[in-house]
Image (cartoon, rainbow over all chains, first blue to last red; front, side, top):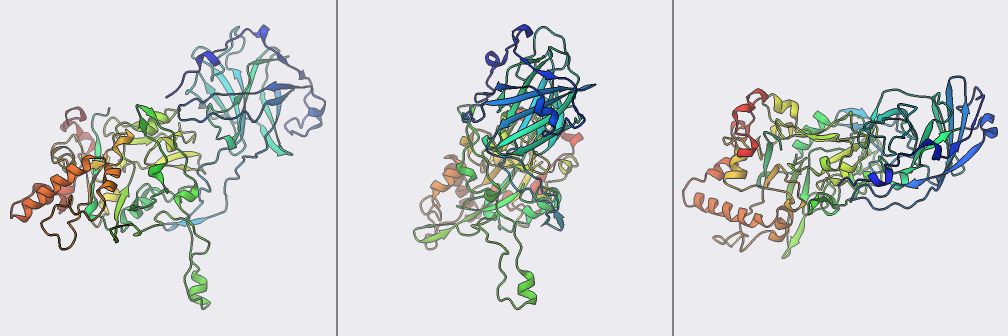
Length: 227
Length: 338
């Protein structure tokens, strides 16, 4: 069932060969606001997004509807701010019902509105143990090279995850500051990450809910490094 | 493979379609937030669309050992919840009690509709729950390893901590007996009332059944009714055996007598419903099961005693349920020996 994509993703590479992402010093106080003026002057780079092939025999192939993500980095005193922007004509964001109630037996409860919709999401992955010459597998790291994932769902918010290979991803219980906004057919996400030294590797992923993206069914970039 | 396997046998000849089992389950397990549309146990009219509608025609399960593609049912497929215009009907002179909104589907939408054979209507009720399969497609499909089959009793559960709500399990289950709680972002399903089973008590759906049609016990317990009906007398079959999941909920197929005026004829010669439909649901072996039941019926009609028919009467709880408490499980055979 689970098709090995080892050849595709086991792309451990030397940092010297990786393209870099420009970073701008002096993040403003409102750097978490995707519309902050700080982002208007920060240098941006457009990274190609790749589509994972069908992971399971029961998956239909998915079209490549999103071809790139624009990335910016701002450096603060003790944190790095990332801004990601990508075009997505479908806004797959669910406002989970709050006050709506319906009777179930003798109780008033909040109903599930749908069973078959998925949320747009975005993530930044970094090696959990910085400084290694060989990068972790893009497939959620590997046993000897764990990864740390900053994940933001348009529906359920931000969560930190860790993994040592596919199927091992788990939530650490940590939250981190992040914002996600949609306007004019584009998502813009900002995240406050731990401080990253120059040359630190990063990779990015985008999930498109309308394509039933979840799990490893997604768009991803290869590893890049911070300037 | 688990050490022991809990199982249920349902005699479809006795189901009244009263939904008492459905409500017993609903009140006990699925009256929380996000669970409004879930009926871990439901009763549907057959032939009919089922719940969720067309669940039997949208794939899932295995084919040649590989998971078969399927679809995720929508909320509408499961059916709408609605209220009636009580205020208007009772206090404002309204003439009719009507649903408040346009209703296009409900969990038992085509109740008692059935189908026609030679101009005569036929239908029966099919109570359904998770089959706690020996080879669960849901478990095979979950990339999170969030679904597991308990070693001590074979009950299949979803680890709510590990589940990320990907819904591969929903798609893979050929019986569509896994549900998605959108509020929690988790898959949820029948737990075979495991807290009750561990105490030596039976499931809520079987306990409340006024038709006394459910038998619960361990398949590997040679003294149990389920063992007797499935393994010894071989009069109960799983749904859709060709889907490859090896279900552990079994059904005694509808065994209607021949039509009026045909006394003495075999059911197989003069059936009240198309046997093809029973073959569709239970596989080719259903014909042999009907033959066996017919022989038992003949034995009883000739003044003899049929152990099978006596057992299927299910006079009291002691006859229907044999559930050793958890610490007594060691005394029964083990699934490898059954």
